[in-house]
Amino acid sequence: MKFAIIVSEKDPAGLNIKDSLVNLFGFKELDEKFDDSNVYQLNNIQLYIAKKESIHYENIDKEIVADLFVFATKHQSAKGVSSLSCHAPGNWSKAEAGGKDKELCVAPALFLKEAFVRLNQNAKDTEHEITMECTHHGPFLNKPCFFIEIGSSLEEWENKDSGNIIAKTIMDVLSKDIKEGKSCFVIGGSHYNQAANKIMLRTEYAVGHVCPKYMLEFLDENLLKHAVERTVPKVEIVLLDWKGLGHYKQKVVELLEKVGIKCERVQRVLK
Image (cartoon, rainbow, N blue to C red; front, side, top):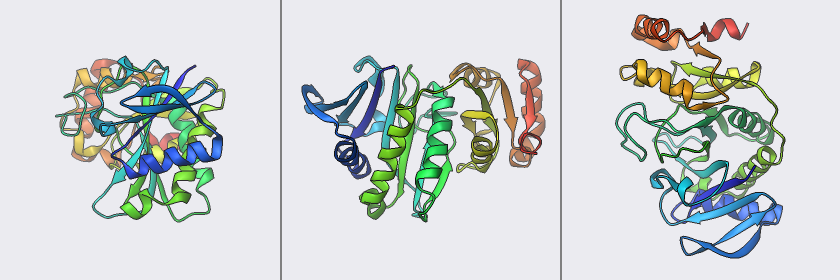
């Protein structure tokens, strides 16, 4: 497989992670350029510095040849919590931060699971909040991709230890032969999805897309099918954060019955 790591020159966290990748792992600068910046390479992994913010780099998979795209970026939150996170990109409703309306990217569930597990291992002695996020924002790609992020303030984005943790996690994932596994789609819960966290760490399932409670008003039959189809490997089961569905329980159950997809409550899978 060929891998592409994307950072943005406008993103201090991305540039921090880029420096860690180069300094810790010996990525070599090539004569080849992308967006007027030199490309770096280590074996089958290439590192690109983009001019645009990552969430707005639509169809970058048409400009770069790779089997998997990893966007290493900053994460912003109003609370400014020190965090390390990962998630698949896509929009359940209107595309307000890149991507396309009601279009999801291809979620590489097994790579996401490996990234989240490794992130927990590499940051175990830190005070970071480590979490899966729900599927959100752009850009839109047709190749498998995921985001891995440092949050949530400039101090954290530029923190060298945080950059090193993300860089090590990326290399742990991309240097490993990912085995076969079972993927799932999580429905319900919050943006920082505790159900997905537990599934990743405590079960055999790998989480691809996550539709949180605040997006359930937009979930319909087409989007449900879309989330299943835009996950690799293809989703075997939908896991429901039952309490986290709120008053949408009946709607979600009826949608699943119409589509004919196997489902189970997260709480039962975790027992």
